[in-house]
Length: 352
Figure (cartoon, rainbow, N blue to C red):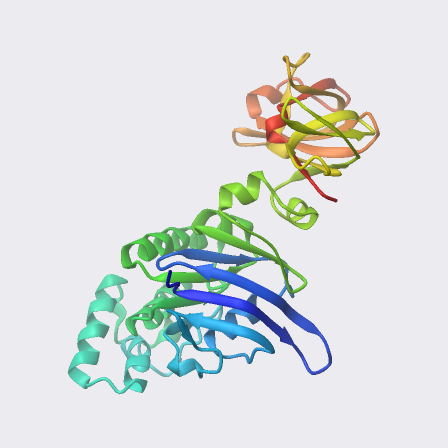
């Protein structure tokens, strides 16, 4: 199979010995939307720059459409990159900014104008086409950056935290537009972000990185429900992590002996860490057959719209967070004693 992008043991080590990225392997099919997610300094932007050709790699290979582009300069690669600060030319008009890449490629004027006019219309920028880019709003500048990246018709669009400078409302609007645009054009998107909501909401697959190492590559739902490493379990969502000693499996579930008693969940028999999502806990008087029941005391609560956020203290004195429907929060004030019920199928067991 020919992949749009394939990274084969790609790594980056700086001259002082600092390892920025270590043995990164990835295969991306045509039209996929893949997000690189992780904390600052984890290596996600460095990886994107190596894909783009803006950063030399220390080891490994970068393949695009079955062609080795490892040592190919950026301008020779079938990619286009959009940066967080948009990198627009303030002295140029919107039209000139969008057409700049085509001019560099040496396209004839008539063809260049035709492509620019088409994409101006696609991004609803025709009315401001002759205005200077620095006179426009953040949302308009974002659209200009996207238009400039797409007008050169790349096989792969690389986006380095392109929504980071936008306010929350505008960010949500552009997120929706971005997803629709990617589906419409069928172009492969590689998207770097530190925002979980963007990665989980926009992408087909998420690559979670930590300290230059790939921790997990999964579809968003799988990543959220079944973290593969302690880092992912702690980084994604709002999970409770409970360590324990492995017990014999029972009823198809892995089991742990913990300070809270025996816990069961989905995972390998040798697992030593139970991962419980905040929304998996159910407030129940006594639980039902097959559920795990944990006594707890309410230590705090907050109601936001239809969701109730609780802080609970368990029997071993640890404090955890849970989420439930606001109606179930009625009458549960600090100091109230409750029973938290868990379906073992919602618990993930991993090696600690």
